[in-house]
Length: 280
Image (cartoon, rainbow, N blue to C red; front, top):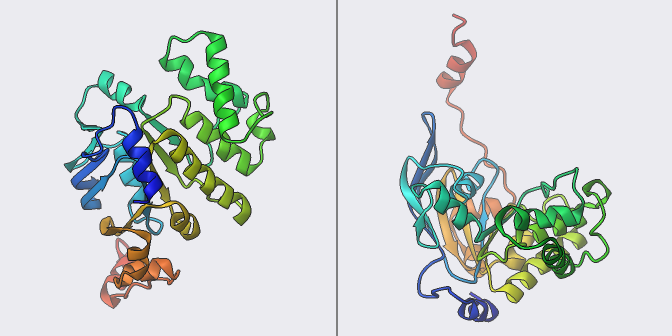
């Protein structure tokens, strides 16, 4: 972890720096008969930025869904801030989620609400603050993500980069302990993507939050990560620093880093069976 990440973690009030914020142990998940995740183990430390990487279909998004409490595993556990998120009751899950912010892929802003209203929504749903206080807090978050003047705009009036910033502002509206980002810089041009990467670093430094980012963008991953978790075929291949991941000799990691296509071997008998099944 970088030095400024250590400082952010140590100064965050109410966070035990000796314990992981996220602890995934032997997590296995099936969709029907198909195994999607297999014995996944992952610890995320307070104040660090953990990037989860993998090719499409590797299982990285499924892991994120588990961390958000949207899926229950076949076996194993995912503990968030000391709580097994798959077994706690709904009331406790709601309280826990108030300590988690999520910047969804594509922003997922409500199209019928202004930017300001989108950012105020978590405060309206989960606090008893008065309208004026909520507006002030929303404007503070708008300023933090460098969207001054955009409060009254509708999502349809935002550029791709502005929508990503608005999504981040809404994600931090409740000052979360953990910020989850799903493909935070995907679909953006390189300059705007670099600005989003820097914003994530600035938010971590300013608020001392732990960040988990799921991405397939190599440049972004290398720019923001303290550590990287590479997943392939539902299995964790490596969890280590950027330098160690770059140097990893595992073929799956090098294929990902060098954008090499993995061409599966074709079994002639299996291929013929797929073509003729239920026909002959």
